[in-house]
Image (cartoon, rainbow, N blue to C red; front, side, top):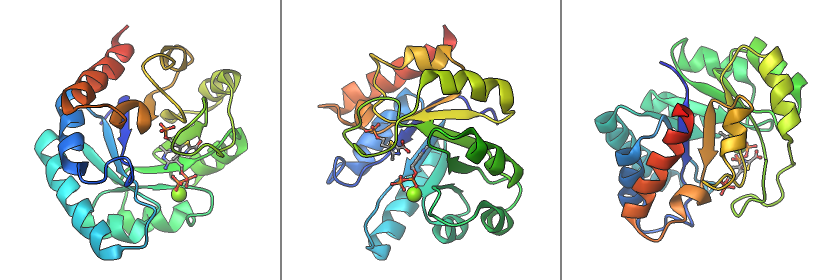
Length: 207
Ligand SMILES: Cc1ncc(COP(=O)(O)OP(=O)(O)O)c(N)n1
Ligand SMILES: Cc1nc(C(=O)O)sc1CCOP(=O)(O)O
Ligand SMILES: [Mg+2]
């Protein structure tokens, strides 16, 4: 499966009370990967919501990725995204199997991406590119790094951090395969607007 297009990421505060409704609206517009990102320690709720999202994703033939938690990903037989402090990639690959999608946060460091590739990552994520509502303190990353990454790496490249329809086009022009978006997608006032935004993000890849 080609990892290219919109990578929608949920946020438990932004989507409080409307998670499934807004995610389905995004799926209607087209989503390549959907990440369930809930930083709480409410394991029962996380399991329940992740199961519901898996069902939705199956219906729309979209791949579900769990943030941070390889055990939960294994339980649901879906992918995982791991940051630099979320545990090593090699055991996650052993746990989830060869087919699973495993992503790695590499901030603005090509060496981290090279290492992630060696350890079996399916894609590498660089960021943050712009001011982020969701994670304002994340380290910053430049478009120049993307040019270098495109030359050096043979894995899909994901960009994250403050991405909106107004600023995403240069990222795609600099070789990004996946646009990972929270607020720029789910910060919309209505489900119709979420669907419109998802379609518009995907159209950036067909120009
Ligand atoms: C696609 C994608 N890229 C980067 C991140 C950030 O991961 P991490 O650094 O582990 O931070 P948290 O998201 O866990 O707060 C991500 N989740 N997804
Ligand atoms: C979860 C996350 N990680 C980042 C990184 O740079 O590693 S930026 C970020 C937040 C992405 O949300 P928004 O699209 O609302 O900015
Ligand atoms: Mg993490």
